[in-house]
Length: 245
Image (cartoon, rainbow, N blue to C red; front, side):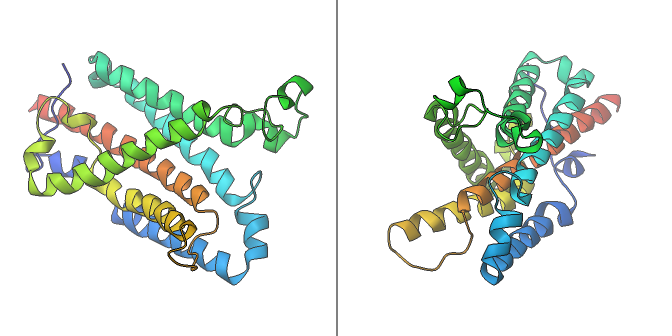
């Protein structure tokens, strides 16, 4: 049976759900502002140093942030509170494998940094001639991404907003698995970037905010997962404190 998270008003409950405001709010907003400014001020610089598909700052972040999430997954799996519940173990292991896949795919499993040549048989099946899987089939790229996007919309935006009016949503057997409110800002930025680009593509306006919005969305998806895992671990620590009292 999955453990229940402490109520927000309980000792340790509120702190378990929180992160430093500079981390979950101001940092994502500052990153978005810097990316927008650089893309509009000097697009050539942005394309080379920020948005390059292989060694740009965004691609590097797409690797590093998921790897940090992997570390948090391992820290969670070491906790007795996690190991005592099979559902938590399965959930976190799946999350860890997903983060490893994201980081590995973004770096083409090291090819972008080491620079090895793609074998001929792999070039024949890979759209971009790289040693990764997501350029082989939509089932390894667009479809998992769409699933993640739905998860972010439902778990990162809809549920936290509903929980503000109905706090009982965060009670019960599966409360520990629900994304916290602190994930809302990065979820909104991730969806805003992509929705704006989609509407622009339909001819509703010509103003572009982000350059290659899909890359921005990927970055904020990575932030979302990381913040979720940090709070998940804090929830389990709060349960430990509650059990001692």
